[in-house]
Image (tube, rainbow, N blue to C red; front, side, top):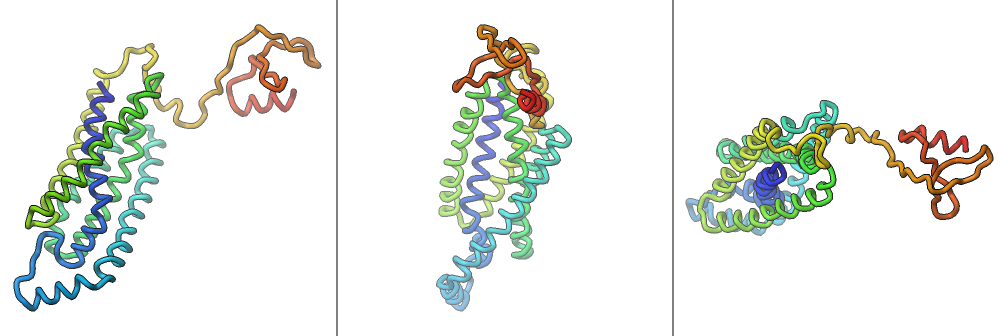
Length: 282
């Protein structure tokens, strides 16, 4: 149930994120040329100026692409800090939810601030990228938390395959809305902002519903100690096989024979450093 819940959230999140990524240069170009909210020239002089601007490659191609790098850079920085904070505090729900709510709120504010100033609209786009990118790491950890155990082998691919449906539908739907609407990206911004904010709300609700969705304690898929395997200090698997007796310089040692005549000590500790020390002594 927890994975199904996250798949629903993932469809909406992917719909918003893929639409934002694919349409960002176009939105910036429309923002620069005053068409982001469906503004149209009101006089022949303005129409001639707009036609001349449309042939300016600097304003229509080069500048939007260069400016698009700023939101992506902000997103990369925000993602790193939020991921580090999530791991340090061993918490994923509030980190993912707060990041998505942050992105959703500023996406909803995009039409409002764009009317005030072009710079205001661009700042909104940067902050949306920062919040959306920051949510990726804790959200991925949350999916791993839901699928922990033997089911993780199937659960993670299932989540990715289902959630990407939103990434396919979103950009096409946004294009259809922009072409059929005279309001430019206004409707798209409101729809995507509401969608991302809803993802944030559903994620924090899941924290309180988790106890009703978790597998029974002691089952193969129980995920009570999710953070035990996150720090990178999980033990090495030990194969207990006493069928072979390998004679070494110090006497008989129980172990398993590996290809090439190399023996593995089954009594070695599971800590990586301790294993290395035993191998050096041998």
